[in-house]
Image 1 (cartoon, helix red, strand yellow):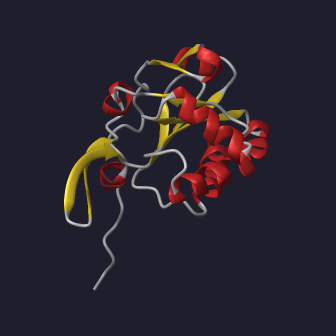
Image 2 (image 1 turned 30 degrees about the horizontal axis):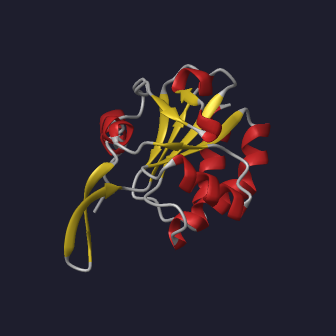
Image 3 (image 1 turned 180 degrees about the vertical axis):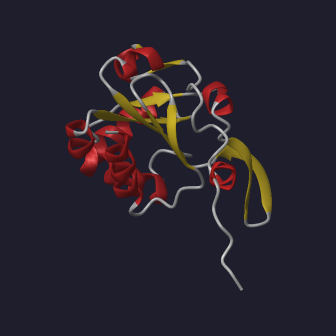
Length: 170
């Protein structure tokens, strides 16, 4: 039997619904009590915006440390990394200090931005359902257009896939 052909329409159907759209604008508290906006972040180039569930948890620590270890490669490609969770600025400070993170973490304590980006979802763990952040990464070009979305991320090794996506923007 012949293999089905991939057409532009079927290829588009497999892309995430937000790819090709303008990234939703936001402003969130960062380190040192300063607010940071999407516009501020894009002023220096492309952006790797990753959403994660919780500071100090195993998967989130793995992901953050992988981004820490690839941040220089991403900066060389004209992109910066920024993490977002619902944790407080104080929690982020402790997480950053403990793991020597070299990129900002922003606090979305009311989950306003996670909802804008469609990553605040119903989750289930050990048969219990609850609302939470689905680990997701957005690669946003300097014009504010979402070029790649990595939904339901597996933390280990993810940062290297993001580096390849950023290379593709060049």
